[in-house]
Image (cartoon, rainbow, N blue to C red; front, side):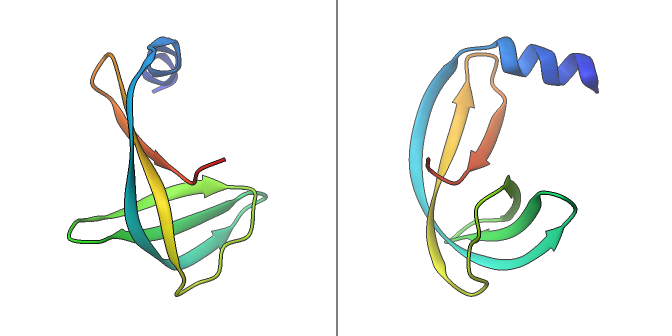
Length: 76
């Protein structure tokens, strides 16, 4: 697992697109892990240190790296 994370971190970002979503729930373990439902799509988990309201609409980013890996994040 660690090698995959290092490989993904080393791969440059190829594209970033904004996606409309809704915050569904949060779990706290030193850093918040949010369950976010993407409009017309799946739910994803996103780690973030900033607070986000449960039930609130949010814009998130779908980030694709050169190696094909995809992850989601809240915009900075």
